[in-house]
Image (tube, rainbow, N blue to C red; front, top):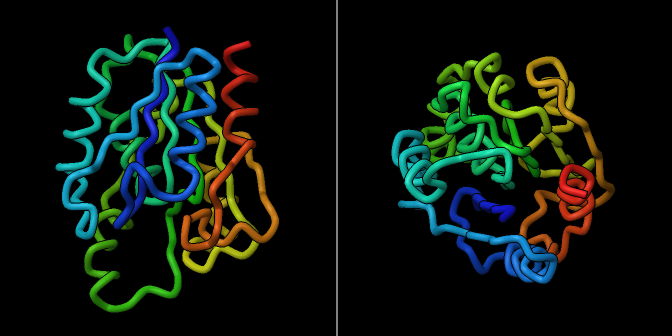
Length: 189
């Protein structure tokens, strides 16, 4: 069975924004879908989040797909670098993923700093999946579009730039994100 794990972002939760819609749509297409509540969502910690995702996923395989939003994308990349290379997954969709951030308050920057400064082994990430899609908005208030070029250089994903989607959050009014289904189906058809 094809399994999809949706990893919410900073201060996120499983019922936020487009996650319930995506879960419902994918379940209707016979995917098994999990949207775990990540620990201490208001103060995300790399070690805690990666450990939690590892626990939730269990044994990854080519029918395992990961969808992340914002800091959830960072979590997925850091999870992938921990996998033995024999445990390749089916694919990764990164929505509003980042290597740089803007418009952050001082206390937010303190929380974000480890995520921005702790290196990621991109070679290990790439060994563990053949499919990566990175989706950005042209008006994201936190993730500048320069991140698309950074992702291209570091991970060589398929890049999709959406118009006027902000940070793809429920607070931006984003309750559906069909492009995610399109990408998953392109890998699983």
